[in-house]
Length: 172
Image 1 (cartoon, rainbow, N blue to C red):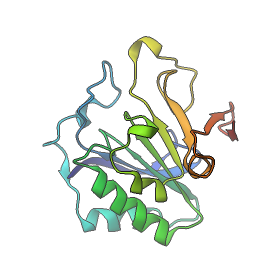
Image 2 (image 1 turned 90 degrees about the vertical axis):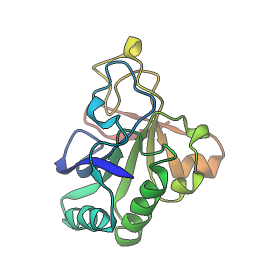
Image 3 (image 1 turned 45 degrees about the horizontal axis):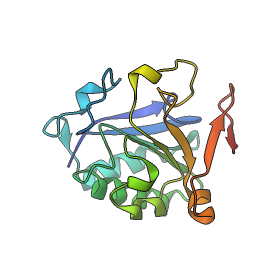
């Protein structure tokens, strides 16, 4: 497994100031994807235990609200084990912080459901250029959903969230 980059202070991929990691490799190749350099599974850098340690160390600041995992495709079968390993280590260390994950897979089609034990929010669905909407917060096209994972598991159905203009989370 590989990753593309780590952002130490990201304010565009989830609420608050976050650490973001962009996994390398995506088979969806959505037209006009904002992150095309992450599509090649052979690009980027090797994802190792040191990568996990680096991400956890970067999150060890009071002003960091959480971790964002994007791509590429963090839920692809080639990446999901590493995504789970990172999310599990993060939640073990930072119970009060949250994890947001972006995936082209829909909630019901995530290849390994174990990841749901550790993530708080899933932004699901492939980017669709014909549904692009620049007014949306934390997603690019109107087909993508912001899902409250713990509530969805509890209710046994997808529980969507909306975001108001001040980036406050509202559960629907």
